[in-house]
Length: 184
Image (cartoon, rainbow, N blue to C red; front, side):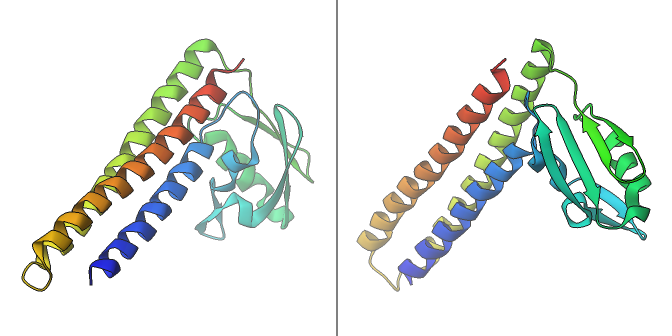
């Protein structure tokens, strides 16, 4: 029973760290990154569809992205979605076949803004980890009477160590992203 709770908590925490890393990847740095654009919602036949499902994305240069839609009728919607996406500052141009996206150079001020955004996202993901820990702790406390208090205390310490390990992983990803953002 204790092992089930610990296994469940471990899986959920690992997924939370993966989601955090993906989320950090959506914040733009000095170089253009296709991951920034993959989740941009594009209005396609009345429903918001992620850009990655509608087009192939290529980065031929550091600040240029080429979006090649699978369906040419979606060109205008793709261009509009990219232009209106917040915190990107991208300027898309459409030549009838592809959408060429260029991003401007980041100013020092804008880089610091993005660092704040990433730190905020990191804190949000740490809260998710703590909530997973809290639920697992409640599940362990519910087992009192069925298992010994020593086993529960041991599992509590193990849960704390597990939480710290995953929080450290988020901190490491956060430091890497911060260094990437501040790199000129």
